[in-house]
View 1 (cartoon, rainbow, N blue to C red):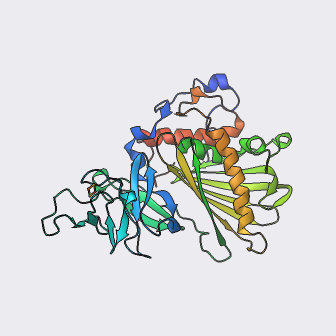
View 2 (cartoon, rainbow, N blue to C red):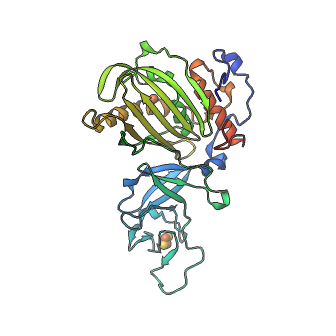
View 3 (cartoon, rainbow, N blue to C red):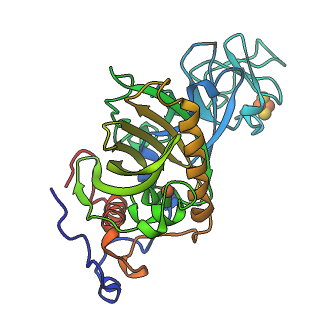
Length: 359
Ligand code: FES
Ligand SMILES: [Fe+2]
């Protein structure tokens, strides 16, 4: 379904009175539904020697490989004995070892050894609280919701270009933001900011005019098509146009497919993960149709490193709450995708949107 008119376009006074069915601001921790999605927490290579620590939706996690090359295990980062952070521990003989009193667990979080009295029965609550984990696209993904909560409500989104013929993979890195995950998604579907926030890299404030974007609801969230004039692309200077099809897989995964006039295609896989109510991270991987010889991966990463920092400098200064109610802001013609995003979040937290059901 094509969204024909998400909200009044250029009349803030009217927009501020638009009816709205949801909370005024979205606070992630108030809505358990967010626990039911998969989030990328690190790159697969980050879990090598010893356990690592990550936080998702305020929940501290420990991630480890019971042996080199085995699947990643994930659990709450808190020992059932005396609450030590298990990420301070180590892996020995395929067991995760607690750094405080040396209790040991296997890949499924079952207690295997209590060294002070090795032959005594294990206390019933000594096992780890495990979390679903899997690896895809060179990243480790977790879903916090356990069976009692219904488990995942959607699969990890498909990325057909990943490892496909004619495409190369350029793994990038994680960037940290002191803003909500919603603010970061909104920023990535906001063509109007490029000319200004990125004026030192690929934007030009004197060339800010846009053509109207398409915005379309889908079964996974929405997609938007836009064309943005830019002054450069990774490793190259020279004005061109980015034609982008941006998919937003609710709540926070993005697939940006950019085509340049010379035919080069550049996909940005943006896995945005909420750390807590006020912080998020993005794990980014790029897929390209050219070769390393034509454009070195180092150039692409260097470009995106600056671009992400430019966004962070602005986004980190936004107020903590993410506004859902249209009356809280003014909206213009360039904000159609942003307005639909806010509407979908409102539908998600009020049970009016279900993944896979669509428009
Ligand atoms: S706190 Fe972990 S073994 Fe005691
Ligand atoms: Fe940006």
